[in-house]
Length: 238
Image (cartoon, rainbow, N blue to C red; front, side, top):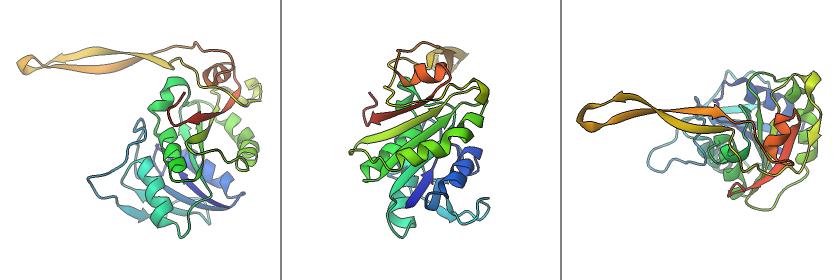
């Protein structure tokens, strides 16, 4: 199996290294990832500027073909599958993202955006995200979930979306499959005035208020209750 891995946290992020290490057990691994942070880039791609690709010699997993990219995660999937790899990938893994991608936040996520680009290109796609504080749940269940999902290609326009809860392994209650996308919001945003500018301008800064409310059977409800959430998301998000 030819596996292409990307992310939105940058090629040096710990999550992509952990993902590549496990993915090697399932096939030939290629990494094409942004040179630096690209969170919240959604499904954006570069149209009016060139994309620079460099071999990334410092990637710490032996046997992985690794490249850094000046573009977005979506660019990484496009140029990775169309040009960098000698043959197209069988599957694209996007992640492991530092932070959950559930509910309405999916539409902003460049982790999910890269996976959507993969399915648009005709590749099987899996997005993977975890909480920011605990990673042992991911390390416990990642192999099991990949083993199951890698053999479950989806119809065009659909991706698998996996979220590992932000809790110690001892508090995790297991895996819930077939989760729907919550209609809620992980954070409810508002904007604070930072500064009154010259000529009547105003400078604002976003502030999010954590909102732990979700429908039963949804992705957000699962992670709030310390379950691993696995679901299918279409290219609209709901």
